[in-house]
Amino acid sequence: MPATSINTRVLLLCQVVGLASAVSIQFVGSLVGKWLAVDMRLATLPVAVMVLSSALGTWPASQLMRHFGRKRCFIASALLAASCLALAARAVHRFDFWLFCAAVFGVGLHGSFVQQYRFAILEGQESSRAPRLLTLIQLASAVGIFPGISLFGLLEGRTSDYVPRVLLVLAVLQVLAALSLLLYRPQSAVVAEVSATPDTSVRELYWPMVVMGAGAFLVMSLLMVPTPLQMCGFEQYMLQEASWVIQVHLLSMYLPSLSIGAILRRVSIARLQGLGLLFLLVGFLCSWIPGLGGHLVGLALVGVGWCFVFVTATTLVARSRSGAERFRAQGVNDLCVFAASGVASLTSGALLSVLGWSGLLSLGVLLVLCLMALAWHVHRGPPNPGRRAAT
Image 1 (cartoon, rainbow, N blue to C red):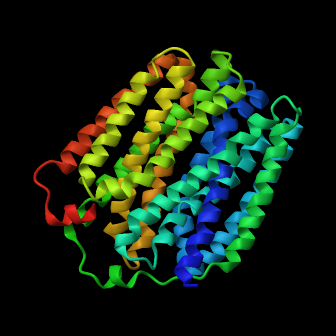
Image 2: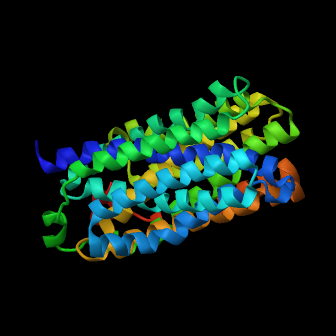
Image 3: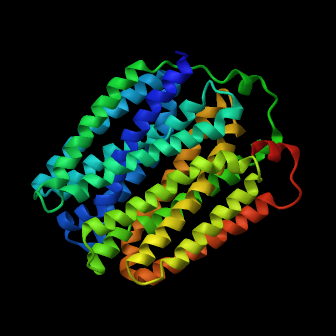
């Protein structure tokens, strides 16, 4: 079996496990924070710590892989995640808020390596296969949602320590992921990408697409992170009902990517990105509707919008740099993405407390309008051959 095929299968499996770990913290982190810290202002701190540690780890992760190779770093990060998930389970059992935050910090560092899976999968592949491979990555992410959230809903009410038990299960899965990475075969840079003459128009899109991808994560996190807190803390919904909303949202983030390859063969990347921004705007507006339906429809639309914006931005970022430049470019891109998501996660609890749900949604609408203005500025004018090729 070709090395690229083995690598793709192994990394997709690790993508499932890595997303399951991250999603579990994103979903239950604010609720655990409220239970352990009591202070509402600290409720979203664990989620913010995880996202910010991922942001802090992106640059070191890219440099470590540059010096030691992807295989060693991927294995070490998976084992780190397993240890930290077990530590998080112990922290919840002991009602130790700060120990839980410390453990979550390690899970976040693992996330900075998980984000590199998509770039590792694209290495050694023809450019024409990029949309299909990105679709598989997003599909693997969607599969990772279920163990990351469903176990909490299934065990709620059946045992008082269901949160530690779920975290321990995820720790075991991380160990299995580390073992599977022993099959990973390091790839050299894509020959066609290195030898090809750089496309100036695509290179120029690097920074705007970094901002677009980071902005998509910012507005999405601003709504997703405080939603369980709003539903369970203020609107008195059950945890299982909140889990349904978050699962639908996360599925909406990843499943639409199955059609992106086909869509990009018919429309330009500018139009697809514009459509994604429109979904984001309508999603925030629908979230004003009272009741479970408003949360469900609003977050679902925001998920679809995030998918279209983030995948198109990631595609251009991946193609804008090649050779030795790719590690630095990918590291900077992920640093910006995680930093934006971290800011939203860190401040969302305080913003919800100060502005209320309606004020939080108003802020989200304003940020989406800013992204629309950026997209119009970047993509306006007749398409040139380079930008059309990027689609």
